[in-house]
Image (cartoon, rainbow, N blue to C red; front, side):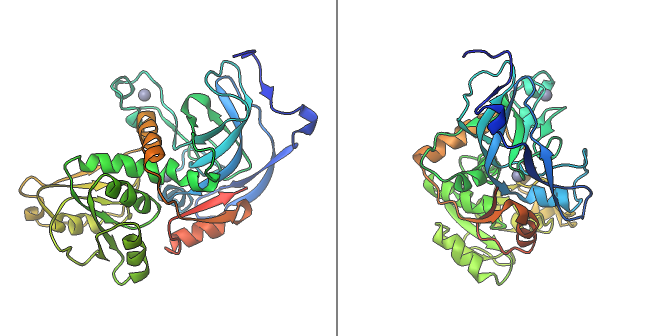
Length: 348
Ligand SMILES: [Zn+2]
Ligand SMILES: [Zn+2]
C-alpha cells in the first residue's frame, strides 16, 4: 500500500464538501439536533467514511433516553454504519479508498487486557463504543478506527439493507451462539430488528423458532411466521412444547421469568440487550433443574467475520424502513413506540 504516512483524500480538497451534517445528542431526553460541522480528518490508524446508511438500534434509544450512563456529550449516536472509505490516516493497512465497510458498536478494544488477551474483546476493560464514546453514524461522515471497520462483500446489496446486520444481526448472532448449538427449539422474546434476522438464521440452521411478542400483537406475530417462525404468540402464552433455549431482545425484565417458564430442564435463557428493566423476584423452582440465565455483551470482530460469512451463504431478508438523516428523532420515536417492522435505517 502506497504512501501510508499521511492522510489521503478521494477527491481534491477543493471538491470535498466543506461541512458535514450530524444529528447530535446534547443531553439525555432531548431531541437530537441537526448540526453542521467541519469535515474531520482521520488521525493515525483511522478512516473517514462517507456514511451511506446507519441503522437505528435499541441501544441508541437507551442512550437518547438516558437509560445508559453517558460518558461523552455531545455525542452523535449510531453504530450500525455502512460507509465508503473517503480518507485514510497514517499507518492504515488493509483498506482502500472507495471500499464499502461496516462500523459496528465495538469501535476500539485495548488488545492487552486479560479479556482481550483471551479472545474476549467484547469484554475489554477499556473499550470505546461507536456512537457512545466516539461519534457515530447519525451523520453524513464518520471517523472510525480502521482495525474495527469490517469489510463488506455484498456489492449488490443496498447499504440500507446491510446496516442492520452490523448490530441487530451481530448481537443476534452472538445471542444465538450463546443459546447453544444444541438448542433445537428456540424461543425469541421481542420481535424487533435483531429477532427478525436471528429467526431467519436459526431456521437456516435447521432450528425451530417460537416468537413471543406483546400480547395481542397479531401483526408482529404474522411477521414472525412469514420469516419462518413455527409458532408465534404473546409473551404470556405457552408454546406447543417446552423450549431448549430462549433469547430475550425486548428490554423488559419480566420476560426473564416468563422465558424460564417455557424452557425445559437444563434450558438456557439469553438476555441479548444492553439494558433491561429490573427483573422481578421469581420462585427458585423456575431456575431449578439446571436452567440458566446468561447475558450477551457487545461483540467481537470474530463474531462479525463469522456472521458476515454466514449471510453470504444464507442470505437474509432484511426488512427496513428508511428515514432521511434529519428525521432521526422520528425514527427513534417509531422504534420507541414499536411501530417498526424490521429495522429503522437513516440514509444521509
Ligand atoms: Zn482490552
Ligand atoms: Zn446496537
